[in-house]
Length: 329
Image: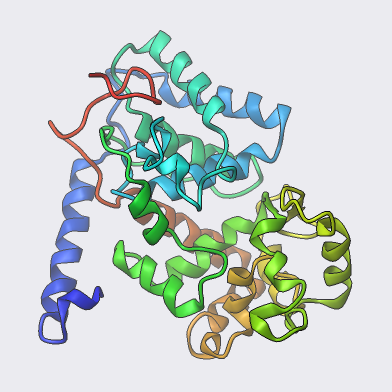
C-alpha cells in the first residue's frame, strides 16, 4: 500500500483499490469495438507482424511502450505525445531508450483508414503489446478495451514512478504497489525481459566499481562480465546487449534460468534472485517459473491484464486522438 494510507487506513485503502480495479474492469470489455471497428485486431496484428519481420527486437519495444505508458497517469497513451522537456518521451527512463513510436504511427494510420476517429492510441498500445508477446512465441489473452487517450504527458512523474534498472528491490516493489500491482506482478512482468536488448548505460554500473566497491558486481557471471566489458569499453553507452542470453527473440522462461547462473543483464533483473531481500520475496517465484513455464505464462497474462487496467480513462474522459503524437485540440 502507499505510505499515505497509514496503518489505520490499510484495509480501507486495500478495499478502495480493489473496488477501483473492479470499476475499471467493468468499463473495459474485450468486445468494445465489435461493431465500431470489427477488424481492429486483424489490422493491428498485421502491422505488428510486419514490424517484427523487419526487426524482431520491436516486439520488446512495443511491449515496453505499453508498460511505460501505464505506470504514468494510467494506460492513456500519454507516452506517445510529443512535447517539451516535461513530456514523458523526454523523461530519463524513456529518452533515447523507449522506441517503436513510428510503428505505432503506422498502426494508427491503418486503423484510422478502416475506422476513423474510433480507436484510441492507448488501446492500440495494449493490443500491440499482446501481439508482440504472441508473435514471439508467448501466450495470448483477450485484451480488455475501451480506454480513451489522455491529454497530459508528465515527464516529471515518469522520472519518479517508473521502476529503474538501478533501483533496489524494495523500491521496485513499492513502485508497483503504488499503481496497484503486487509482488507476483513484479516478477512475472520482469519476465518480459526474455526478449529485447538494453543499452550499456543501463548496466555498465555493474561492470566496475559496483556500488563503490571498486570491483564489478559479484553476482554477475564472470564470462558474461568479460563479454559486456568488451562491448561497453568505448564508453558511449549506446551499444546494446540482449537481455536474455541464448534466447533473445523467444518469449519463454529462459530469463529466469539466467538469474540462477548470474546472467541477468540489469541489476534490477539479478536482484530478483540474488539480493538478500529476494530470499523472502521474489526468489521463490523465480524458482517456480524456472520449473513451470506454464505458471509463468499464466501469471504473466494475469499481470498484463491488471497492468492494462491501471487508471484507464473511459466514458467522456480523455479523447480519441487522430494522431497519437498530439492532442486533438
